Image (cartoon, rainbow, N blue to C red; front, side, top):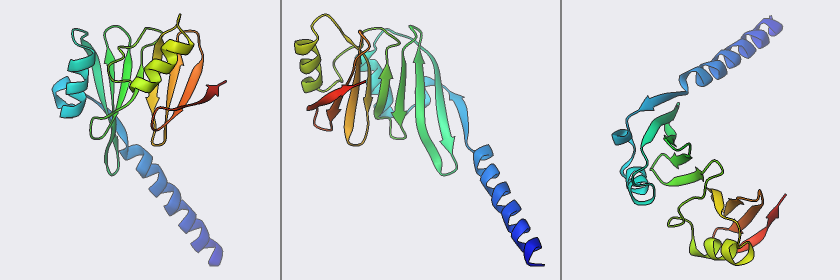
Length: 149
């Protein structure tokens, strides 16, 4: 009888876990359904580049993030409030207006013949990928930490 209860408990746990994965889903949305912060970001830094698609990544507890794909191939991710998390130029130079000044200056000064093609903002750090393939890591204040290999 003990084993039956254990097995039943395991199956209930597996079904609950599977149910959580099933209820989390991506859904295509219109650009005007993005949070205002994300729409403003796009208008300021990517003006004139049409959005080819926008995806709302929903989790059980609500929206986790938004993914936006531009017609030129660039991709960006926003958090649930519309703040940028990652901008991937897909090997194209990014507009620098949203990248912290200290990061832009470091890249320009130390790698003058390159450009930033991808940038990620995490809770405690930034990561910038250059057109030569190098990945630079910075702290949350934009101070250079190291080259990530």
